[in-house]
Image (cartoon, rainbow, N blue to C red; front, side, top):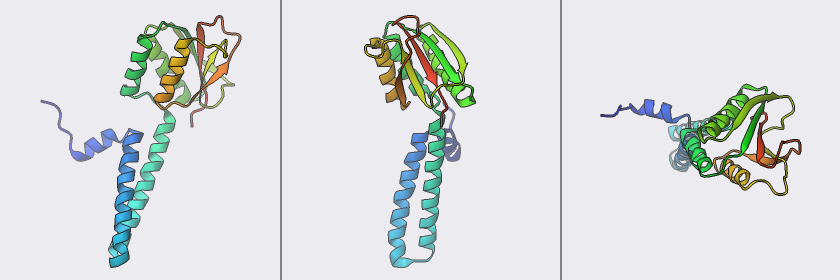
Length: 184
């Protein structure tokens, strides 16, 4: 028999998901709107409840934004990325990140997924000059490898804002570099 969680434990364990927090925030905002409409007729305590619901909704939205900026790969994201990469011919991958804890952590997560998919990945190399966010660097930006296009598209679908970068000093057209800059 599975482990049964109490309601507050389930909320806390699910609370790490930005999508879950946004959903709860929207539900609270709708409830606040309903309480506000009711408060127009009855006033008093109903207005206080509506204000509290609005504030809680805003706090959850801010928390979701902070969590989303960290950009960790959740189990579903990791599984989706791994599934896509396993279907492709491997590219040689270099992974680098600025010397910021969140960027290095995210770069390591990406590298670990590459290793799990049997892609030859090296790094995480620390850089001083990576741009903010995530960039996928290729030698030939006009005609990048098809696998790199699929990787970029998959990362975008998983919620990672990633852009192309041109890096002519890469050893060949089948080598890419994932550059992780400052996150958030």
